[in-house]
Image 1 (cartoon, rainbow, N blue to C red):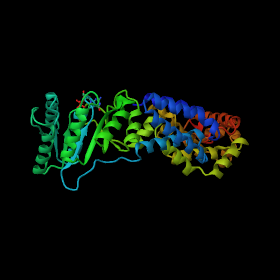
Image 2: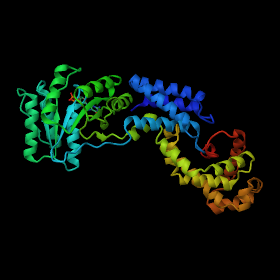
Image 3: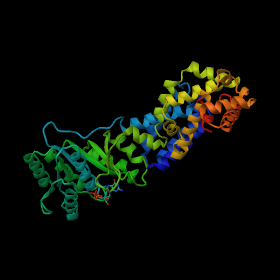
Image 4: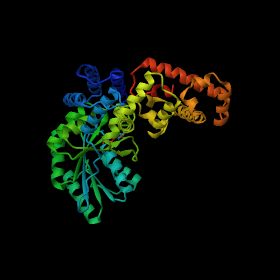
Length: 443
Ligand code: GDP
């Protein structure tokens, strides 16, 4: 999902990497990339404009955190803004004070409205809430049959009056039945058309007035992209929606619709459809969706963890040590423990942009490597940790460490030579890279 968007954004951050702070000049290119990415993903033009303007203002005002690179900082701003546009938190389905809760489903034909009706009923049934589904699409007899079949499949009753009755009458009667049976939620499936059509709208408005639903959910096909914006605007202006269900997110869809729907209607996306099966419905979580759009695992968590772990003084001291070649095995161990505190290596790597593409095997390998280094360093004397040269010149010291740690002498030799090479590289790199020592830990 959202692969194209994620790739574009990733190239935007790459360009910011290596810059030491966010400025008006160096952010322009990244902003252009974000803008292009969103437009390519069919986000509505006005939504994109507002989004970019907000991101630019916030990014420039953002305080650069110690130990965090400007590109990560920028990502956080984009991420926060994405979350904000999509609505901060998950908004659950409304529940009426007195049963039944009445849910009206609206949307174009083929968007997955009938499927979503059954998915929602199953979702509620799993929470021990009883449901009644009401079939009002009298224009396509197959639609009624479809709902009846789905109802049997999930063991939820369907109320229908055939295809000769008036949809408003069916809806009203369906709600009466639900009341009489003491059902918790009644979900009314309505007729859709291939395009927005005034007759369809008028009927929907009449049904809505007749049953006074607690929720009017617009079902939006995520594949419709740009069109999602117009669709949302029309339905919201004419009928009034309280939320949306975004379907077909399992497909090859772009992220556009998710951003547009909330921004244009001001109403939350409550669920997402992720497959044809009736089980394929999930609550919509704006933060997860934002991470997913950004294609970089949970970057926010990384930024926050980094902030907790690094205080400025510590980072500066480490920097000095690196530059003056005083970075020793004790510092190395400290850095590794710091990383460990931040979570398992696998977890951490997944949080780093670009690294989330590493395979589980590669991650496991890195983790094993880290444990190995730690065991060997733990077997060194204080003196040896301070002065790695002692080890490169003394096979007997290396043998002792090998025995103490349970590894081979050749492993110890490799650690020492890797460490020395890394230290030399660090000096060369000078101030580049926000996490001192980190780029080489896994190399
Ligand atoms: P309606 O005309 O809006 O009621 O649409 P339907 O519920 O009949 O769905 C139209 C088609 O989309 C059917 O083939 C469904 O199986 C399919 N569909 C619905 N929701 C999803 C979804 O979340 N993912 C995928 N891949 N297909 C879906």
